Image (cartoon, rainbow, N blue to C red):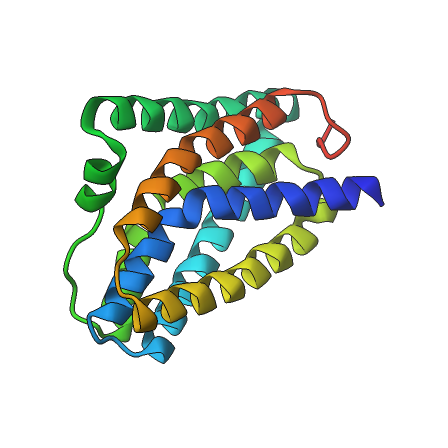
Length: 196
């Protein structure tokens, strides 16, 4: 039971760490007039693409050399360090504003925007899936999709009520690197959810 909770907790923490930028993007899109249904559908399309790519790549990496998969923790760890360096050099607000762009509010455009900003999610979940016994993958995927439901509701609510809030962007970008580094360290350690 503890291993299942660890695997699900890791998936949810990874989701929140790698999707804070998407929360802000969805809120901005909603505030700019895109429909909640299109935003939600585009976001879930991107989440499914991320999970398929990451689990497939994780499966291949785990079969290639199961003993080496723990080293994939260096990916989220380095993403976190890079995020801290970016914040230090450019400031959290400037870094977050650089990640936003205008896009037509259609479903396909929203899905492509979310996929384009999901490189960190793909890298993080590839490492997580590769290092985790495949018996936990379904629970992890369900946890990520459930977190996506909450994320979409929050983003659509924020966008509809208050628009793009600079404080949300500022605090979110400060938290992301730290969560990434914790997940990277977890993958590097020998834990109960590991493949070997």
